[in-house]
Amino acid sequence: MKIKTTIVRPGTILCWKEYNIFTKLWNKLKKRDLPYNKFEIIPTNIELLTIDEYNFIAYTPIRKYSKQEIHKLQSVYDNCVNDRNWEDIKAIINIVRPNTFNDSSTLEECKYYKKIDLNEESSEYIY
Image 1 (cartoon, one colour):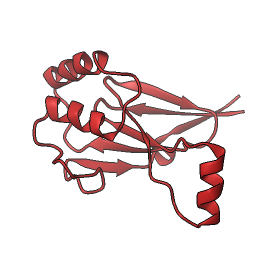
Image 2 (image 1 turned 120 degrees about the vertical axis):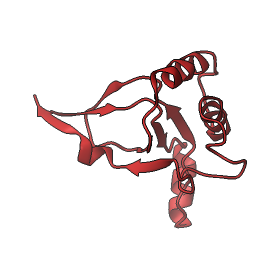
Image 3 (image 1 turned 180 degrees about the vertical axis):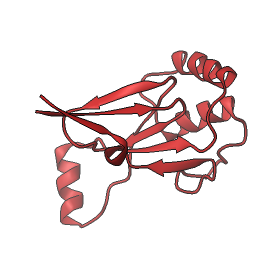
Image 4 (image 1 turned 90 degrees about the vertical axis):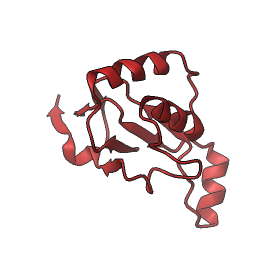
């Protein structure tokens, strides 16, 4: 079994797709790509472990968070709901760093975040 591990910085946003089987099949027949519908923001430095390749994408802030911003992010993160959508993530980031996201902006359009490939940055261990 291969385990991949990656160190993820605070403020990184993980995005993945979580749909039921019928929605996946229907959109595959229609040849449509489903948008990302699940989001998670990382409040502290963590070591991310997976067994397979990462099946999500990550956006990391271009400028690292300061200690004060990390503490603010942790306190806001702890007081929010568990099932976060894109609007919740935008609100959390805008509380910590105001004016990062506009009302209609997406992660691809944001100049303060860049997309990273976790598979390239990970270390692989074989057990």
